Amino acid sequence: MNLLCAGAAQGLVKALQDAFFEATGEKVEGRFGAVGAMKEALLAGEPCDVMIVTASMVVALQADGRLVPGSEAALGRVRTGVAARSGEPLPAIATPEALKASLLAATAIYFPDAERSTAGIHFASVLARLGIADIVSPRLRTFPNGATAMRALAAAPEPGAIGCTQITEINYTPGIALVGALPEAFELATVYTAAASVNAVEPESARRFVEWIAGPRSRALREQGGFEP
Image: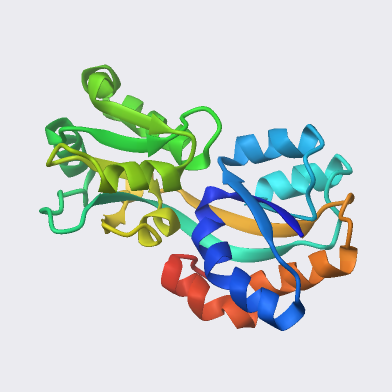
C-alpha cells in the first residue's frame, strides 16, 4: 500500500507499520515530506492509496476529486514547537521577547521548507513578525521537511543551535529535546487527517489503514508523539 504522508506523521507511521503488517499482511510503502510536496506528488500521479496531510488540504483534495469523500479520519492536532539538542541548555521561549532573544543568540536555526511545509511557512512569518528575519538570515538552515531538519540539528557541529518544526517531528527525532510550543502569540496548531485516494489500488486496505492510524489502536502512540485530541 502506497502512502503520501506529511512529515509530522512520519514517526507515527513508522511506529505502526510493522504491527499493521503483522495484523493484516499489508506492507506500507511511505513517502514523507512537506504537505505541499505531497500534494504535488499526488497531482503528478504518484501511486497513492492513503494520504495524510492537513485537514484543510484533505477537504480541498476531496472537493477536487482526488481523495474519497467521507473516508477521512483525524489523527489529532499538532502544535509547532522549538527544539534544542539533547544535553544542551534549553533556550527561553515562553514569551515573544524571550523567543526573540533566544533566536538572536542561536548559532544556527534549523527548520523545514519555508514555501511548502506548514511549520516552515509559519516559522518564516514568526521571524518576520519579530523583525529579525534579515538579522538571522545567515544562520538559517532549511530542509525539505521537519524530520530532516531535526536530524540535521541533532548532528549539528555548532553548540547553541536550535530548531523549529511540528512537535511530533521533534519528539520522534533521537538526540533532540522539545523546548516547548511557540508562545501563544505565535501559536500554530494543525490538524492532520488521513484519507483514501480515489486511485487506491486496494480501497479496502486503504480504509483499514485509515481506521488503524486514526483509531483507538494508535491513540496512545499518537498522544505520546505529540498529537493532541
